[in-house]
Length: 472
Ligand code: 6PG
Image (cartoon, rainbow, N blue to C red; front, side, top):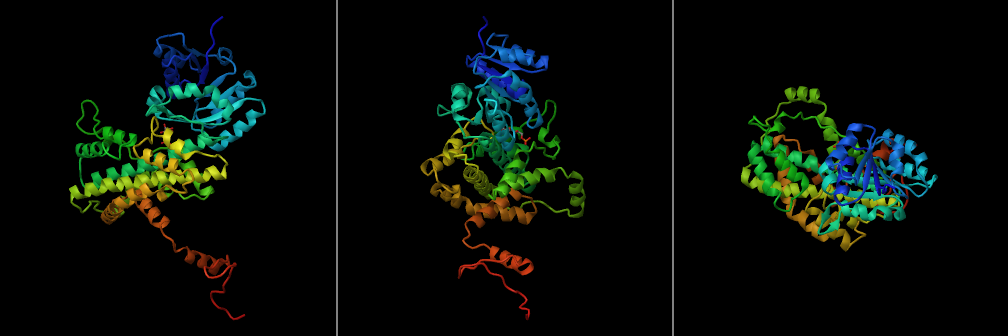
C-alpha cells in the first residue's frame, strides 16, 4: 500500500506551493490540492517529480492520501473562498482532523469558523504566515492560533520549516481562537506604518534634499548596516538601485504612485478604534495609501497650491538627524502595535506572550528588524510592561533621538514636504508623555453644547454647568 502523506495543502498558488516545497526539502512527505492541473504539474516539476511531494486535482483523492488524524492547510484568498473550501471539505474529514487557514483572514471570521468546526469535532487553526514567497520557500515566520493540543500534532513540522534566528524557530503557539490571525493583522499594521515612514524618508531625501537614486541607495545601504537594519530597509536599498535592462533610470520612477492594499492595515486601525487603543501612525499609513489613489484630486490641488518642496538644510548634518528621526519613528510604530496587542490580549482573553511574538518576528517576516531584539528583551524582562515607551532602554533610545526627530519634522514641515507618519509619531510621543492633555476643554465643550457632564480634579462626582449662566 502507498505510504500516506503527513500534511496536505489546499491552494497551490505561490505561497502554498513554496511552503510545500520547503517541507519537501526537509524530508517531509507532503501533498497538495488545486483544481488547476497546471499548478499541480508545476508543484511536482519543481520538486523533480520526487514521490515525497505530490499534487492532486481531486479533493477526495487528496484527503484519502493523508495520514490520520489529517493535518490540512488552506492557502486560498481570504473571505468567501475560505468558507467555500471548508464547506466542501468538511464532509470528507473525520473527528480529530486539523484544518489550518494559512491566509490573511480576518480574526473574527477565524473565531467563527473555529466555533462552527468544533461542533463537528474538527480542530481549526488560523495561522498568520509572513515572509512572502521567499519566506514560504526558505523559512517564514508563522503565527498559529487555536487549540493548543491540536497544535502539538504539527508543531515539529512547523518548527522545522520556519525561519531560524539564533537557532530558534520563528513560530510559536500564539493563543486560542482567532489570536494567530489577530497577531498577523497587527504585524501587517506595523508593516504599513514602517513602509509609510520609509516612503516619507525617501521623499525627504529625494524631493526635499534633491538627492538622486544612487545617492539615496547608498544612504539606505549604510543605514541598513547599523541599528536600522531590517528587511524593509534592505528591499528599499535594492529598489533604489534597480534599473530595467537597457534603461538608465530607476524602475521606481516608472511606477504609479497609487498604493493598493488588501485590507489588513485597515482592519488593524478598525479594531484599534473599537477597543480604544490609539495607533495613529498605523492609521495614517492606511489613510495615505487611500489618499494616494485620489490622483486627479492631487493633480488639481498641486496646480492650485504649488509649493517649493525643498528642504532648507545642509545635507550632511541633516542626514545624521534623519537617521535618528527614522529610528525614533520606527520605534513608535512598533510601540503602537505592541500596545494594541497587549490590550487586545486582555479584551479578547488571548493571553499573548509579547516576548515570544517579538522573538518569532525576528526572522522570516516582513517586519523583521534589529530593533525586535530590544522589544523581545523589554517584554522578557517585564512581561507586564504596559507600553514599550516605559521600558528604560527604549526610553533612552527615544530620548537620544528626540531632538533630531523634532528638527527633521519641523524642517520638513516648514519646507512643505509631507511627512504625516513622522509627524504623527512625534505627536503621539508628546501626547503620551503629557500628564495633562487639553482634553479638559473638550469635556467643557461637550458639557456646554450637549450637557454631557464632566468630572473634576478637585472633587468627586459628575457635574453639569449652565455655561451661559442663564437666570432660571
Ligand atoms: C507578509 C505580508 C503579506 C501581505 C502583503 C500585501 O507578512 O508576508 O504582510 O501577508 O498580505 O504584503 O499586503 P497589502 O496588499 O495589504 O499591502
